[in-house]
Image (cartoon, rainbow, N blue to C red):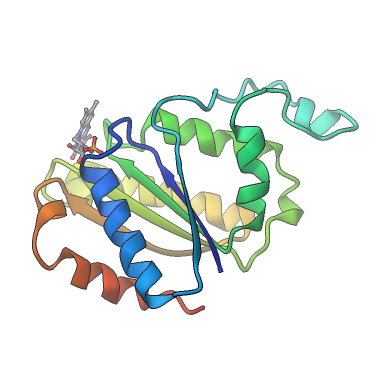
Length: 181
Ligand SMILES: Cc1cc2nc3c(=O)[nH]c(=O)nc-3n(C[C@H](O)[C@H](O)[C@H](O)COP(=O)(O)O)c2cc1C
C-alpha cells in the first residue's frame, strides 16, 4: 500500500505538520506494509496552473510547467492513499495546496484509479470545522473526489490547541480504522 502525504502548510513543523505526522505514525502502525512518502508543497514550490490547456491539446498531453509537480504526477497516480494536510487560511485551504490540486488538470482522469482513497487533515484557530471554514475545504474535496471518482475517506479537522492534546493519537487511530485496506 502506497501512501502519498502532502503538507500544504508553509510551516514545516507546526500544527498541521504535527497532525500529519501523528496521523502517519498511526497509519504505519496499523498498516506495517505501508510505504509512506511525504512531500512538502507549503513553500510554494508548485506553480499555479496557467490555464494554457496545453495538457489537453498537445500530442504529449503533458503539463508544460517545469517544476516538482512533474516528479509528483507519477507518485499521485501510483499511490493508494493521498493524504492532504492544510491549515485553514481565510476559510479555505492554503494557496500552496490549491496550486498543487489545480495542477491535477493535466491528468488523464481515466488513469486515476477509483480505488484511490483521499484523506483530508485540517488545523484551524476557531472552535470547530464550521466556524473556522474547514467545512469549505471539506466541501471542495468532496466535489473534487466525486468529479475524479476517488474515494474520500474522511476529514479530520483539529483546532490548533487540540493538536498537542494527549489522546489525539487515540482519536486518529480510531479514524484510521475507517480505511479498509
Ligand atoms: C493567513 C492566515 C489565515 C487564517 N485563517 C483562518 C481561518 O479562516 N479560520 C481559522 O479558524 N483559522 C485561521 N487561521 C489560523 C490557522 O488556521 C491555524 O493557526 C493553523 O493551525 C496554523 O497551522 P500551521 O501551524 O500548520 O501553520 C489563519 C492563519 C493564518 C496565518
